[in-house]
Image (cartoon, rainbow, N blue to C red; front, side, top):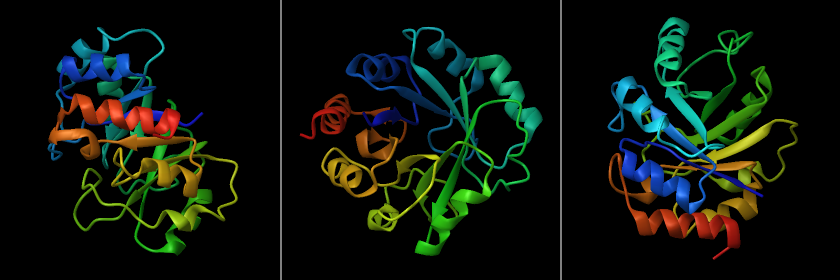
Length: 204
């Protein structure tokens, strides 16, 4: 069963509803330049109110280990998502579970998946000067012949209308959505979240 992450959570109402609707994971963005940035103290309040067994993910962009660990201490996030230009060397021997995001511009970029010593890799659309959240997708067909033992997470431009097609082409371990279920950056749309989760679970 394809797992679902709702990213860019900024308020308790969206977090609780996403959880109730069946999301497996919620993402909190700790990159200050993001339109969906959330203060660690606020994220901590939201996380402490969640039901058990929801994976909480902290999204970071080119931030130091000290900064990441500080946010982890404050919030209690369960997983770190590195969404910047972090090198394979940076990802070696990390003292926490992590996912590395790769921004895909050309088909050849997908080969980077084997460079990173992590078990899970997220593929997102490359966008000049932006680190995700653009609502743009890359060519999912590029993943059809990918041979890897890593868990693949698909992101970038996913919506309730196209996530079924994306899953059929890429067969990801999980899908990650933010702008595709929003009214505005950081404010989710309840009906879009419901439709997205149903499309993943039931193919509707």
